[in-house]
Length: 519
Image (cartoon, rainbow, N blue to C red; front, top):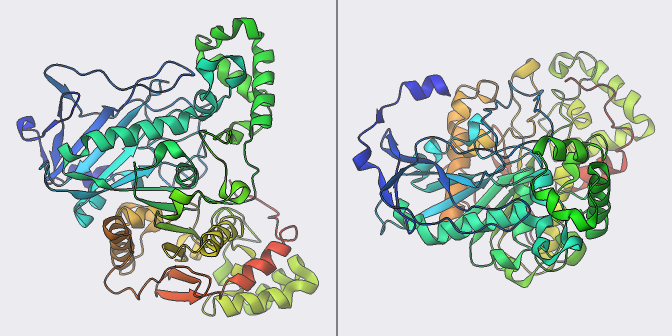
């Protein structure tokens, strides 16, 4: 990405890149005629308190470099740095910053606004962490205003101290409150960047998709966005972080730090490294347990637990996943991992060894769903996010919503002689960045497919209906017509074809647990 960026024309005549926000003037840069503003403070906040508006300023404030990202409990060691290139940046708990890419600063341009929420669960990540998150190409390709943002995470964003004083009433949802504050800032200021405050789409993947789903269940976010995209972000595999569990975790953290209820204010000044250490005492992987606290008020709770809010039913939604996610043959190696080099006899043997008497049933369901795929792929197909996306779409369909769209990204990549798409694999295609993410690039395929997917997402942001040239009509997912758009070397609309496969594979989850993880 950076090599490509060096070939672009960066215009440093800053007088041409001045945006007039309600708080004051901001100075950005121009990259290949795209206006870029980085590190814009959208809020400020004391630790464990709700975000507050930024104070106005005199003169011109620079918005040229990115703002701090939220600290993480553990130093990130991504095992997928090649397949999902990361960009790491200085951390600070004062991390309420956003970034904007736009083709115009005309306040009357009224371009659609696409606000990206990053992945990493509710514990890690940032709005600039992945190379693919760069919004320049998406903005240029779709003539839209792209926004990415940072917000509080893990113990800073989701430690529930509500039992220790009214001032901490929403402390278990501060990470989401930051996002609401960012959306409020966008409402007030996005016209200064050519955007339409009345046409805002929130979209996100993994933890970012879960944040989109949470926003739909939050009254405080009503009216701040108008369309939603949930990419690999809903599943029933993880229980809701309810108030009982949140309070239990808080008690353990306070006990670890030796802080009693009468000294709760000390929590505002404990060094972050100590907070992280205390959160780590909850157990291995406990950091990923943090998330919105379902309190029935600020955050109503998951649709699977409390149903869909009436306001959310009016919001058009895209929900989907990718074929391999975390269980593909790149992440979980079987034999030598090179599935496309195995002969049919070996494929059948490996399937039968794993599934036993259920092998024939699974193969038949897989061939019905994906007649052109390698049959051994059934051992690497994700059920966690795919089942979650289908259940989410089903729930909306049952409630009479005719504004829900479902998809599956199935493109096989050449890595290891062929591997199912991994968790995050669709993001470069939507941001129109796939041609410079090495393992995601397939000559003659990538250029065509990223045009279609990027344009479909842009169409949805503009009108609430995803459409693109060279793509068949993407119908809404309804009870009568449960349509799924399949993105692959060939694009087709599927009706229930993978439903039986998901049911079969979900019933065989224990048998499909990978024997070896390739880290």
